[in-house]
Image (cartoon, rainbow, N blue to C red; front, top):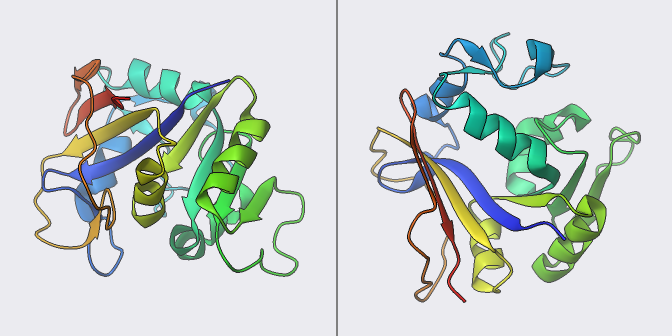
Length: 203
């Protein structure tokens, strides 16, 4: 069974978006490089909103590509789902998406897409693991990600740290309470405009 990895781009002061859910410069490094992440750079859905394709620096590309290729299922909260309309049924990577929500999938919304709505974080991770098989489960950071970490269901925390200070906004770990220890980072990669870090969760 694959690992459960809590992953997100984050500001130096720990925010994944501002108070209006805008990401500002956090995702610029995804589109400012010269190396495509995906084969041929062909993507059906424009995740940048600008017509750009994912192109990162040569330092970031091997790491990002290996992470993306390892993912079978993405777990996201309803807030992000609504903000991006579930990427119109086409996630940036992985074959399945589990949405943690007390509300059902919108009626008639992309019936062909493998999106599953679950109202409990433990059940959501169980469903995500089932769908992912031997591949990894990627948990989006934020309130839901923090709840999943607090429940002891996260194996690894991965952060793409961008050199910007937001001051306030949506926290990487949401409103998590208590102390949670991590191991020393086993990934430290300096990209252009981003620092990739990954930590195993200490058991």
